[in-house]
Image (cartoon, rainbow, N blue to C red; front, side, top):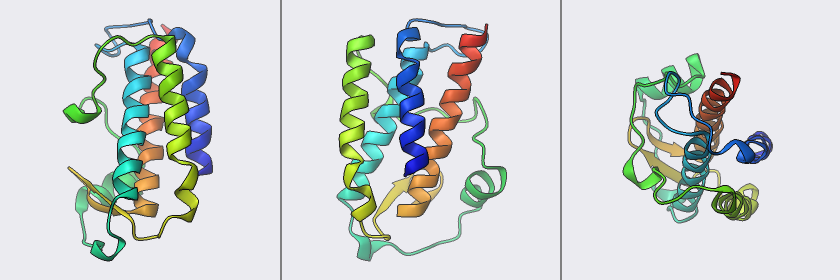
Length: 153
């Protein structure tokens, strides 16, 4: 979770640029990517906390192995964010700072959680604690790369 903490801090450092867009990179603003990343972390961590560790059973999933383990990169433009993690309403510095604070608080007990807490990902299937953390790191890196590309232009 140390790596995810670092990435959240990196997202936080981009908040002042929340209004910046570059349509050749993404139709969404820097703020949208920050809020989406934070919302994803928050929703998934909450789901895993409420999961039943006894319900976790490993099952082979080709896309999970390919993306999370072999490529270790999410391809751009290949998937659409589920509605539940799409930001709604106004995105500004205040709302983003509040989201960062909420996520930091939500992930505090992560270390103490059972190794078989789980999350049902729509593409990668049932992920345990370690796989969930790997996904969150990969997903956050993906959006930070998009943010950095937007800011370079």
